[in-house]
Length: 170
Image (tube, rainbow, N blue to C red; front, side, top):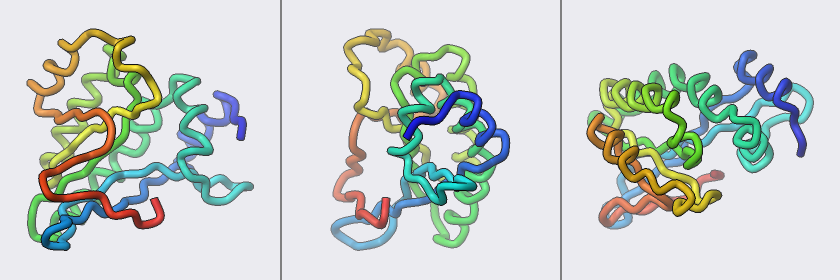
């Protein structure tokens, strides 16, 4: 599907994107240890669209930061509700493109989101998507800066000790 930058900006402004949460389940004990936030688009004409239908266009138009900022309040509120109902801290993973993480103006927003999720009772983990070659971005200092600010950034699939991601319509 093709979406123009104007249409994507309009959708972000109109709050047509919504977070869905895929549980992360511990393989040994079966308990939910967290979730992965997956963006979905409640398109007025096309219905519910999965990320594969719009994320390439979001990234190509440089709107990844705007999308994440648009979802941040809902994600933090949902994270607080999830941690409260679990009665303990949970992990929340969010997928980010390498280009977005390497954008200097976005990093303060990423660190602020990390702090907000921590305050909501979640342990944030930012996963770097594998669509871009990390060797094209040799500035490892960026990751040290984010880690110093409390953010956990991982590339590729999440591996959390003996726990694995269990697919639930993701």
